[in-house]
Amino acid sequence: MSLDVEVLDALPPMGVAFARALVPSRPGEARIPAHAVRVEGVRQDLDRLAAYSRVCGYTLRDAVPATWIHVLTFPLHVSLLGDRRSSVRLVGAVHASNAMTMHRAVTSAEPLTLEVRAEGLRPHTRGAMLDLVGRAQVDGETVWEGVSTYLVAGMRVPGEPSGVAREPYSPGSPLALWRLAPDLGRRYRAVSQDPNPIHTSRVAAKAFGFARPIIHGMWTHARAMAALEGRVGPAHTAEVAFVKPVLLPATVGFGATPAPGGFDCAVTTRDGLKPHLLMSVRSAS
Image 1: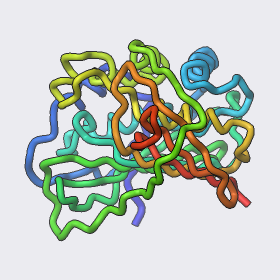
Image 2: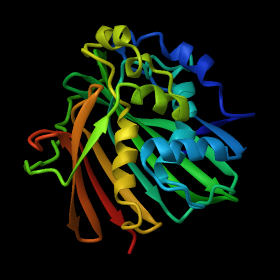
Image 3: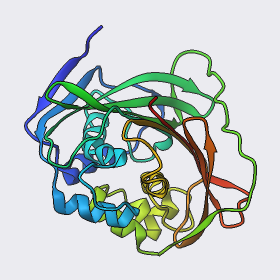
C-alpha cells in the first residue's frame, strides 16, 4: 500500500522543527505518521559539505559520502516525528542502529529529491522501536537508501516484543586511537545542523542521564567510514549498531578486519575491550 506524500517547499528549518521535537514523548501508546515527507530539487551546499568532510575526516572529493546524504535527510526525520499525528518525538529516543546503501556514486553537483517515512513500529522490552526510512533520488533514480532505527523508552505497542540480537564483538587491540576534543559536539553540530543539546550542554546531557555531553552517533559512523575511504567501492552498504555512547572528551580505538566483500569494524574504548559502535561495510558485487 502506497503512503500519502507531503511535498515540502524546502527542507524545514531545524530550529523550528527541533523546538517541536523537544516536547518529550509521553508514556502511552506509540503512534507514528502514516505519510511520508519529500523535498525536491535539494541543492548541496559545497561550503557546508567541505566543512562536514573536515570534521568527519573525509577527503574532499566530487563524490559525496553516504553519511552526508543522511545528514541532508535529517531535518525530515525531525519534522516527521514532530508532526501532531505522532506521539513519538525524536529527542529522548535512542538511535539504536543505522543502515545505508549507496547504489552509485553521487556527486556534489547533483540536485537530490529526499524523502523520509516512518514504519515498522514494534514492541520492545523497554518500550517501542521504529524505523525512519530515507531515500534520495536523482532524476527519478534511487541513488541512496537509509534506515535509522530508534528505541523510545516507556511507550507501548500492542504485541509481544521480539528479541533484538546483540552484535558479536571479540575484544582486540585497536589499530588506531582517535582523540575527541571537548568541542567536537559543537563542531559537528555546526555542519550537521543537529541542535540536540545533549551533544553540547553538560546540563542537558545530565538531564538525559549522561555525565558529560556525548558525541553524535552519526559522527562516529561517519568517522569510521572515513577511515575506510578508498577501500570501499562507490556502491556499498554499511550497517551500524550503536552500542555505547561516547562521552566527550574521549580517546577511542578503531579497528577494521577484512571480510568477504568489505570490512567489519569497531569503534571501541581505548583499550579495545568494549565497543561503542560496530559496523559492517560491503561493496556491491
